[in-house]
Length: 113
Image (tube, rainbow, N blue to C red; front, side):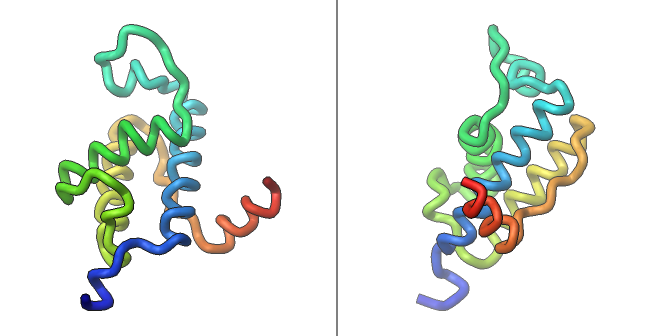
C-alpha cells in the first residue's frame, strides 16, 4: 500500500469530529435548523456534531468519493475534497467558511473536556 493510500489518521478523525461540531454551532448561530437546510423535515431539530456528520458530511462524502464510512477516507486528499464541498454548500446558506481544525485546536479541546 502506498503512503498516499493510507486511511485517515486518528488526528484527522478528531479534526473531522471537531469540524462537525463547529459547523453545528455555526448553523445554529445562523438560525438554520436541519429543516431549513434540508427542506424535507417535518419538525425542527437543532444541529449537533453527529447530525452534521451523518447528514451533511456523509452525504457529500458518498457523492464525491463513493465512500460511506469516514474510516474509508484516505489520509491524503479525501477529507480536503469533502471539506471544500461542505464549505461551498455552507457559503450558499450564508455561513462563513469554517477552517478544518488544527492539531492545536483538537488538543486544546481535549484539555477542556
